Amino acid sequence: MYNPQLETFLCVAEAGSFNKAAERLYISPPAVIKQINLLEESLDLQLFVRTHRGLQLTEAGKSLQQDARYVIQYCKDSVTRARNAMQESTDVIRIGTSPMTPAQVLVELWPQLQQDCPTTKFQLVPFDNTLENAREILANLGQNIDVVAGVFDETMLNLRKCDGLEISREPICCAVSIHHPLARKDKLTVQDLYGEKLMLMHREWSHYVDMLRDDLWKNHPQIQIVDFDFYDVSVFNQCENNSCVLMAVEKWRYVHPLLKILPVEWSYTIPYGLLHSRTPSPAVQRFLRAVGKVTKQRVGGL
Image 1 (cartoon, helix red, strand yellow):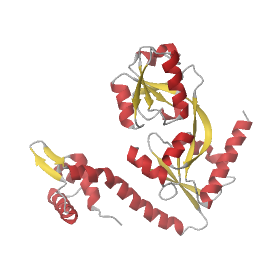
Image 2: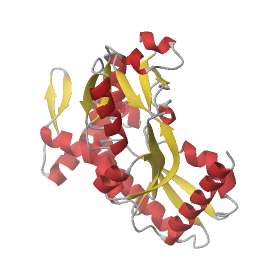
Image 3: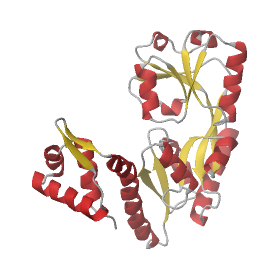
Image 4: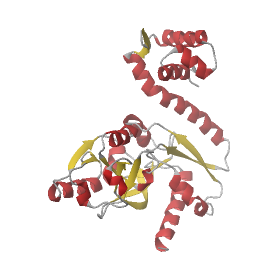
C-alpha cells in the first residue's frame, strides 16, 4: 500500500544514525543505507546530510518526516477498513486516540452501550496530536477515524468543520508541576493564581475559555495570562519546565507524569464529548444515539 522504506526513514530520523536504526530494525547498516538511498532516488530528494555529529535531516527530510507517520497510518487504516467491509454484521467504530483525546470515556460507557449496540466493536486509531493532524482528522471524520473524544464548543466545531455530542460538562482546572508550591494544595482559589503565569488557549478557540479569560483580565489582573496556539505534549512540557499554570481538565491527568491537575473554586466548565462527522455513517449514527441515550440516563439518575 505504501513504500515500506518510509518506516526505515522514520527510524533513521529518530535514531540519528544508520547503525542505531539498524539495531532497532534488526537488519544490517548497509541494508538500512541501501533502503534510504533507494528512497531518495525514487523521490529525487536528499533527505539526510552527514555531519560530525551524525545524520541531520534536510528541509525536505523534515517535511517528509511530518507527513510520513500520517501516510503510514492512513494506509494501515485503509487495509483495516477493507477488512471491516467484509464483516457486514459487525459495526466497527474507529476511535481516534492521543494523549489529549483518550478513549477512556467510552470504556466507562461501554457496559451500558452493549444493550443498544450488541454487534458494535471498537477499533482504536492512535495519532500524533499535532495542529496539522487535528485539522486534517477532524475535518475528515468518517474517513479514517469516526469519533474523537475531547473538549469542544460551537466555536471549535465550526473551526474544525465537524459536530460534537456532549457527554459531560468538565470543570476547568489548572495543571501545575508536582514541584510547584501550588501542588501541595488539593484545590485552588483564584487568589492562589496571583503572581502566576496562566497558560490559556488563544482567543476565539473556545467561548468558554474566552469567558474565563475576560473575567480574569477584568477582575484579577494579578494573574499573567500567556496565550498558546494548540494543546500538545510540548505545552505540557512547557508548563512543567517553566513552572507555569496550565488550563486543563481532569481527563488529562495522565498526559504528563510530572503534572498535577487541581480543581479551582470557580464555576467555569467546558463541554466534553465525542467529535464526529457532520454526516456520520448509519453505524456511527446508531452508536451516537446509544451514547446520547446512556448520557441522558446517567444525568437523570443523578
